[in-house]
Image (cartoon, rainbow, N blue to C red):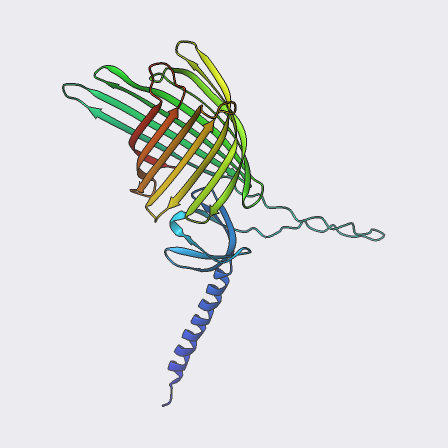
Amino acid sequence: MRLKPRSLKSLFGIAAALFCLALVSSAYSADSVILLLRNGDRITGTIASQDTNRIVLTTPWIKELVVPLSQISKREPVPPAQKPPSPAVGAGATAGPASPPLASKPPTLITGELTLGTDLGFSEKNRQLYTGRAKLILGYRQFKNTFDYDFSYGENAGVLAANRMDGFAKTDVDLNRRVYVYSLAGAGYDEIRKIKLRYEFGPGVGYHVVKITNFVFNTESGVAYQAQRLTDDTFNDSIFLRLAENLNWQFNARLSWDEKFEFFPEVEDFDVFRFRFETNLRYQLFSKLSWNLTVIDQYDTRPAQTVTRNDLQVRSSVGVKF
């Protein structure tokens, strides 16, 4: 069988196109990138392969790291080292020492979420309950700053049923891949539980037990100074130990779950303690819109008079990410 010149030319064109495509694919798959994840983490590595659902990275500590595209908020190339131009050397002049390369400035990661919920009923007895929450995370290098604000207000048959507000600020500083230190501060009030003002602050140390793309589990320990002024102007304060854990699990592109637990035994008397527990189940309705189911439970062995020790809340809300 003899190929005509036109057929040879066509085959040569196809072969050349395939060869160029292979070169481009090879160059692209070897790109070094920085992946900024939605949970605030940053991963640097070389792209081994990718498809419509995931990217496979090669890093110094793992050969193949699978990252779902749904968890990536931003992708940036690793900037090459830049060197300033060398000064010209004239007659009788000597070249000085080489200037060090300019370090590239890592990006600052900012993520946040705003959730709003309501429970309304209008019948023989009217009820109205409004809840809201704003959370902001600022990340830079090994620093992570989290700001969390929460409120709820409601009436049942004209009687106040909820009026509370809490705000927390937490700074984490990674010392290495596993260990980090933190500082925590918070303040708020709860009229139903007769707390006119409460505040706390304290340092501690944490450990990343598991830190992979879709699952993070941390443990923490430290101390916290907590103070409360009740509505009858009674004031109590003490130093507590803080033992805590938190996790975040992304089941798939739409469904995720997070949880945290804090236990505060009093240093001078372990029979006096407090704890805070919170869990959130999120379902992503759209790219920025989610439905949330939240359970919050707080316990205090030494509450105000006539106030129960346990305080349990179950909320549903709609959240917007930014």
